[in-house]
Length: 241
Ligand code: PGA
Image 1 (tube, protein in one colour):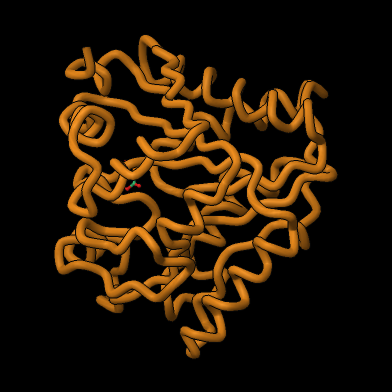
Image 2 (cartoon, protein in one colour):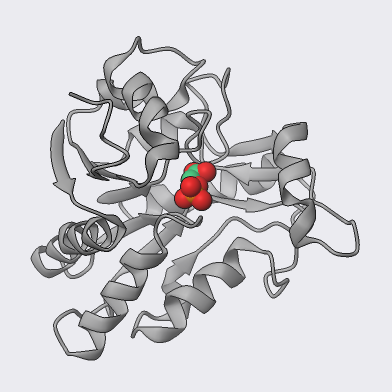
């Protein structure tokens, strides 16, 4: 694993954006696996800034996102499709038809899982997969206990996640399930870029990268991948040495 140390969130965002833009500059038709959450927001902002300066071109890039809530329309304010459109895609010159997020409105889980896997395959596989890590070690919606061999699949959300999400759904209609790339889909990416920031992530970073490889800490599987770059700020890496 390659470790890139950053001093704070902004520095982490800039260094992660550097790694991602290097990928796109060296291979303009890269397939990027992207993630939602609070951690990547600064990185997306930085990439938009560099795009506006003319330093990076997304016209040939394809993206596949990790996950989406089941039951939410693409334009729902809390859907991950909407998150990506609002925070990244509509600010850069990526072709909308080259951006992919699981279809939360597809009721047939087997059909949607197979479609999404076939899509990743038909794009040629993921060149670089971006990942945040949850406090419990989840990657995508692969929660502790998730089987390492799964491809894209339907995931029932944990009660903790449902409760944590309640504040975003004033009508009380909180999604209880999601589609997520599985650990296997993630591990097939050629390169993996993990970003972590803040003290709250220090313990899980230590467990994931120093502890045993176990489904109880899904991110620990990344120790078995041969091309992982971890970009973390001082706080997140404070227990790492
Ligand atoms: P965060 O989420 O970036 O909002 O901390 C990471 C994750 O849960 O995967």
